[in-house]
Image 1 (spheres, helix red, strand yellow):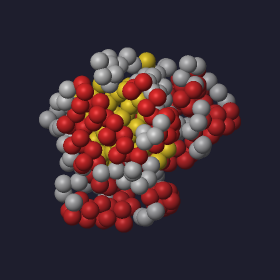
Image 2 (spheres, helix red, strand yellow):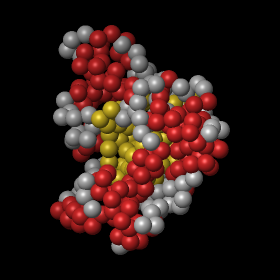
Image 3 (cartoon, helix red, strand yellow):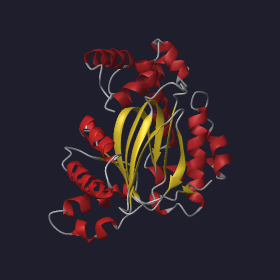
Length: 296
């Protein structure tokens, strides 16, 4: 299926801001011509942005450019929980008539918006401060919302590091069958990663030969199918180690591995520490930072 085209109801200010509590969150694969600045909080889920995928584990900030397909979901099905939410600002490419971001002193914002065409994350951003600003914007009048957005974008340009998420070309293929193929591949892997993943079955879903599929997937994502499946499995393992009461062997089998040695090897390759070291570190961090990610 192609990504759904989302119609964003922009008002006088040319921007929309909303906060949604997301029970068993499932934001469908979609695109829109507006920029999107989104704060996502979840203790277990996945996000897909173009060719990029990553487990959601905590609170993070993303800036997405126009027409880049994206979706995310959470595993939280507790109707009483407010831990999973998103705060979203959507604004058009010509906000402030566009010319503002091409001239000093605002051209640095224009540069950041160009980079956001592939999706940006801000690992070093002050999430608590940004969350306060976003929540304050929810009750502002239109004029002050516009000023606050400008201030927020300026603040993000000062982030110590940013991460470009997707690969070139992915946000240009949403009008043809390639986007359906990638969506179907993502869905199959995400549904079946706990058991054996069949290259032949994925190829059948994608209507390609196994050899053509491997070449196609590498071209679109800059990673192999094995690398992608491994990232999904290890991401799931990290969630279990942090939030579950599983021992290492149980986590191994729950994440799609039937060999503890292989699990440990892949885990260390991606996370740069063993599962036991990771579990100990995360538990210690939780004890010393009990308020982490409780910024709303």
